[in-house]
Image (cartoon, rainbow, N blue to C red):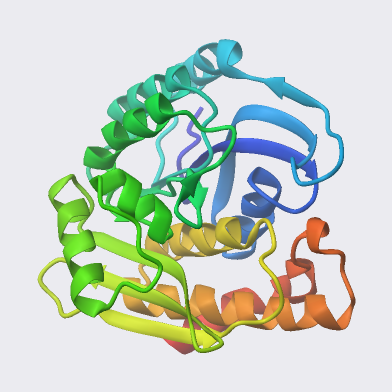
Length: 282
């Protein structure tokens, strides 16, 4: 039986039943961009951790057996997207996954979900952050925020880094593996800046209006669009513009509907349009 006629992306992330983040974002976004989304759960949450309470199950002990079944099926992937990882052991499992499934032509996107505002997330240990660096040699595309870029390069965090400093950060990251990097979510004068670096090219800034407070899941929308676009042959800069424009539109509608901040962004309102927008930015 042949399973590999259709474009596929393996997405390694946690599953969150409510709150619009992680796999429950990637599944519809990647699918709407006409790529099959194949999830590898790292953990299961009833809802994300910004709510007052939540149910949580770690999936580490099941991941290898889960992945072994894919090996038996002879699956191949056009893309691999990695997101939040919960333990050093999971980084080892993901590294082995990449060693096995990353073939010539497989685009790997690493979204190093580790922290924000200059600090690691409370669930993240320094050991886990160190282990995350071991995934970078496999990454074709890296999508950190500024905090994560600083952690990965052992750089002192400064919120107001200029173009020269951001370029230096990207050059340090590129030495570790990825040749395409976007440092996302830089705030300046009421705008959000995405700093786009491609090795050998002059960096470009993609700016959009900042709309409302930070919401969980926007990074997952961003990385999912980037990964699906890469598999579909969209240029990197065009893909960043596509993701940024889509999120901006979604945020406006989310504010209009008065969606609670914890409930994420209502991207469902525009899923039928996301593919058409890809053609506009090529």
